[in-house]
Image 1 (tube, helix red, strand yellow):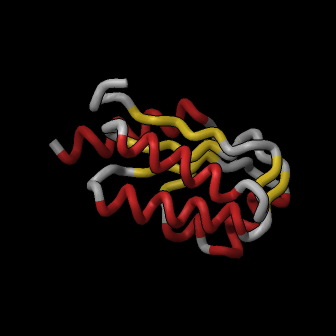
Image 2 (cartoon, helix red, strand yellow; image 1 turned 90 degrees about the vertical axis):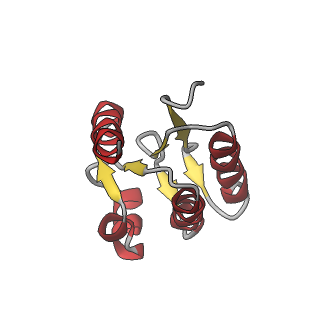
Length: 114
């Protein structure tokens, strides 16, 4: 990965207390590798409890401290979307519905910051 490449962290089918820290660890590793942007991809996630938004927000805080933009890919509907809506993910972070849109959003943000 070069500094111009965004890192994509794909969340597993279920995120809960047992694996939320693992997802956060993946995001931290991606940020340490020098990624220009971070995509948190929940498109394949069918269930999450509060550990999902927790991993999202903690990853975003770390990325923000490093000056790295974050985009979250969320399903259009379902329990994961509802949990993220309730937790404020959709109000506080850039969210899109697919990976292509996430890459375009990051490209636009990175171009604007140059």
